[in-house]
Image (cartoon, rainbow, N blue to C red):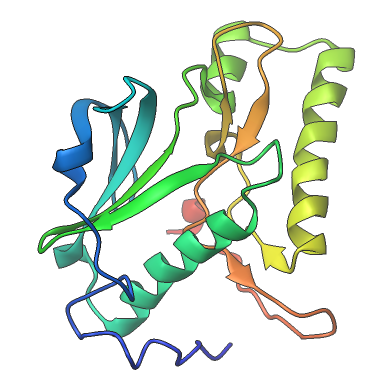
Length: 195
């Protein structure tokens, strides 16, 4: 699949097509919440309001080519595109400096679906069906808005609180793409146990 070439107007060292204020002028970064392939997520607090958020910080040194820059920009665009859907983590803002691109997002303090499954050991059929209904609803919403997530797994669904009836939300749109109905996509699925 051919990548969009809409990034030609951006400076070669910038990911965002606009300048941003400094993240640390508006937020205090706290403890590490998680680690991904490209970035680290931290707890952060907005200085003006005291509201807690999550901040995914992506080191620009890990962005090795223009395509990597475009992937980060596309993730930001997709999160904004899906921001009104209640079961998707909402993006609050983006910041860029010489070293990092920061995505400030809604804090989902209940942790990953994967961890909850491990902790509980099992779900009742009714509760499992409710969770699957939410996950399928996210897929349906994404597809209706022209987005393919492409990395659906329990680790990429977060609970908004530790409560038993907490809302489940999709996150990590780093591999997501915009698509048009009728376009053909070819995927290669690799089993990590084959290596």
